[in-house]
Length: 298
Image (cartoon, rainbow, N blue to C red; front, side, top):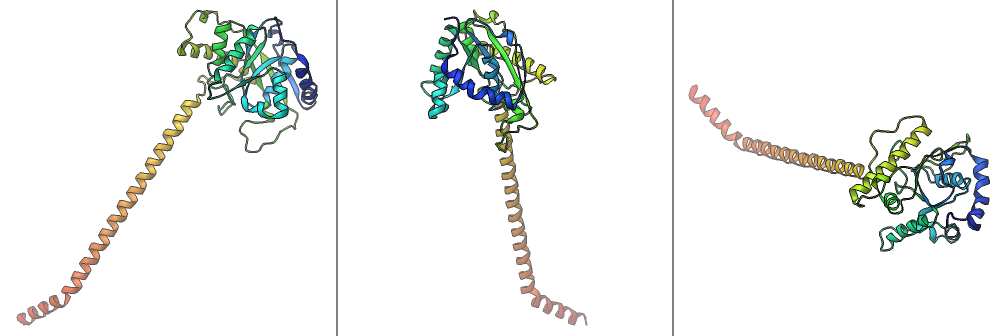
């Protein structure tokens, strides 16, 4: 099989979604010629909005090659959406379960069968404050090295302006009319890594090569250089945890210091009260002694 047929369900979804995308958004598409006309291949895409899968799917659908996405298994539980996802050949991902490897095997089989499998290497919406690609996961590298199929980097921008990630208000920002930008680059040359053992370190290196290619394309779309260092959510979480721990320790220190000061104040007050009581008790005797002294002096 040299390529996947578009099929009824993909055409059905396109009939519903494409007119809306054409009506609501402008398009800036580049590099469609880099999508292979035949054979299996992989696309690796950045992810900065819940809307960008539709933007990218529209782009690739128009090349005549439809992608198979790796989608969270929970999406397949919706009755209507599940039917569409299965009908269009999307691949369910079972996270943290014994079925987690099923998605990997399905992706390899699809590529080897002449289909396109689309990866979001970040695994979720980017957490980078400026929406640059963050550290990627190694799944795309594993499939690329095992199949040796072309890996096409894809960058997109604009969907995030319509539906910003992690926005406090869940509403579309349709006006003024936004431009959905998608660019596909040339296949990434990974031949130098094909004969290496798929160790964690080698997979990480290949993943970085792929993420660098995506970041370069995104820099072209945005008209600004990509950051020198990629955002790492694990490092960010560790930093937040360290700051939280330091803050808790500081608050405990302040509470301890406050308690110590209160104790010292109480002790000082008690000592003062004791001294005053003693002086009051001794006052008559002192007065008497002072009187006797004066009398003796007289």
